[in-house]
Length: 280
Length: 249
Image 1: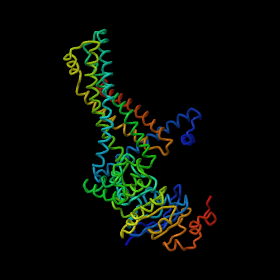
Image 2: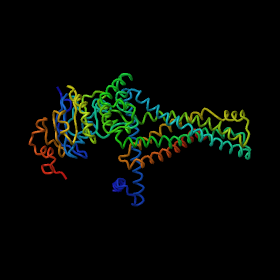
Image 3: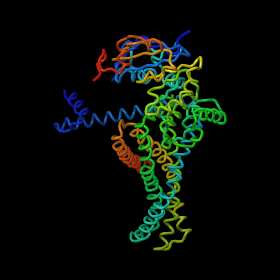
């Protein structure tokens, strides 16, 4: 009976019952969502079956276009943000570390804050705000205007045509943008910091070089793979949901907020897996 | 020889149910399906397009059943037929040229040069060559329909399904398009199925006329029978009368 009541509430969207029922229906709604998302991911894997029958030229153009928008067009934005953030971190580090007598760890601090955390996370946030929202809106509009249905009727799997090229383009773009972010943050930050404090260039890069390890590179590659997969996957998932014009902003907002949440969550999970000493 | 498309006692309980539909369209034959709103036309189209999979009875294309097709089987079937809707279908971020070439680019063995040749001939025939670089938002309703038609026939399908064609088009624009349509319906081995509320517009093209009401076939006949039959459903429809066996509210 309780399950039935929860299912009824789930369907009606009511939430003013007793606490156990409210919690139960929320859990069931969450479970439904997980199952539906699982089925969506499975359908994407299934769409690989048709890969051998299609000509890559049709997909190639979409990958190229998406890479231009997600990667190249985002570069000016990434450069400015990286330069400012890099400058702030370097100024804070150089003015505060000596107070604790640990200025020798300056390079480590930069690698920890910029390369390991800020670079991947800020890049992902910029890509979500620019491209994730654009992908969700574009897919939602295509869904509403029946363009996705038209693709399906033409024997073209929309998942293969819409989602997979965007995943490839986003992985490629995020990885390149993270590298750009790190380089600009270090270099630009160094230049900005010169206005406040002088550090010899060779000392600066020697510090960085000693602190940077292969593990950092591996973590960056993994993060760009995970974010590059997550952002288009979740954006297109919610983008394919609207059945009316009215629902488009609802699902676009859901796409952006959920992608943000899972990006921060996965970023923390990867950092814990790579850098928590007791896990090593 | 097996018909191109065959429905055998097909029943489907969708939002617009159909009951016990049986008909056959032979290769080279053209059919018009018509009826009032909610008569089952929508479900019929979805069944023909293999978008509706929960049904009893059998639907056969070139003698092969569509029931239980696997993932690739469904894609192959959809790639063999052509579909054009009077109201939607173009990909908005693609140009006219890219929209028409979509299927050929995606599936065909043709080289890019060969595809360009095919597409140029089609655009020329459809009088939209000057719009090749335009996106759907820059087109008129007629140009959108012509582009959608071009995309539907670019891969030369055996069966073309045209649903609610000419919706919102001016009579003169329709007339200028008729010639293109005629060439298509006169191909001896190709069939066109029209789903429409206005069967009289297709008198020159169709060999068989089938009328649906409440999900059942209430009339099926030739062009001549369509014009002369005393079938009460048909008479009410032809005369656009509110009185008759069909309850129109």
